[in-house]
Length: 254
Image (cartoon, rainbow, N blue to C red; front, side, top):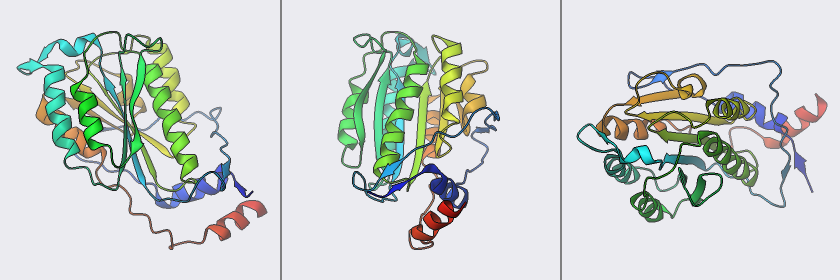
């Protein structure tokens, strides 16, 4: 079995990674620490297939505060409308997945409700429409789960494609220190970009520091626009523009 390490994909990421800037978001530089090393990931071609599919994994706030009012309506109701509109605009060939946090019947307070895939838009809508806000805000567990799911997909696609973790929340983490640790851990996976969306939040949020872009949505129109921005300008990857065997040879030499 041919196993390829992360060093090869680092080259791919350098060539094809990009980010966009506009007036609707705050762009931040992720803190870098020389002691934080990239996670070494091994690929097994017998258990995956090279795919340039793009992946958006959402973790959505289902905590009790989503029952509160903002901008003239309950947050959960406004969020449902914005998300349902957004889903109708997501290209069919993009993988999307969803986890809900603030779930009381799970000891970690987080549950995946829609696995990454392309034929799941109705499942996504049903899951959002079925959210019953209750519980806390375990953003650390939400972040860790999102990282795990995207790393799993990264392995399945043998390191090709694009990977974004979108965190939608209306409040601060139940445990800020654990949340910060989870965000710092994300730096070990440079192929994953975190996008943060704060709904009706006043004050600073850790997502502003550790996201590639943070969106401050004070109403549901801004939430919808922020959701669209998270899928904007996804890279077009031409697998024939380079030779993977050449990259493998170069990595082995170095």
